Image (tube, rainbow, N blue to C red; front, side, top):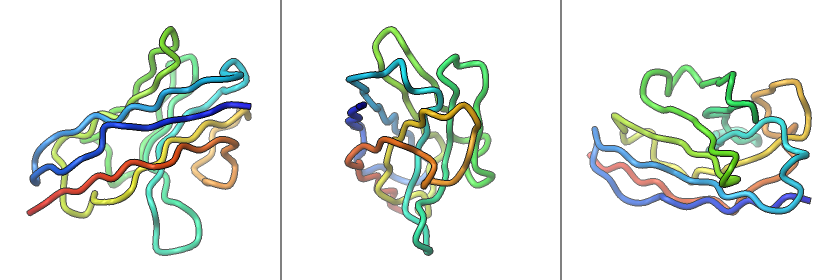
Length: 124
């Protein structure tokens, strides 16, 4: 079992930056992929970014490429989402997630563990 707790959300003006953190505990060695999601119009949460535990591969949604950076500090069992050049449309509750699988996926249903969410609000 893995527990995830995210933090770092808040209110920022358009063009500003925030860094979200996701602290993991429990059987963290079972995790191979870590990611960030936010609500989508449909039933599934929208993929934002993901990183392999090794840190060697990262993946981003087209809407955030060039603006967001995902990283991991495995010694601290924590991974991050650095969000720059924020836009009002980035406003959402952001959820961190972890996947025991080794194949990368953008589908939220493939991820095994989830944090409680942290609110990001970008004002215009």
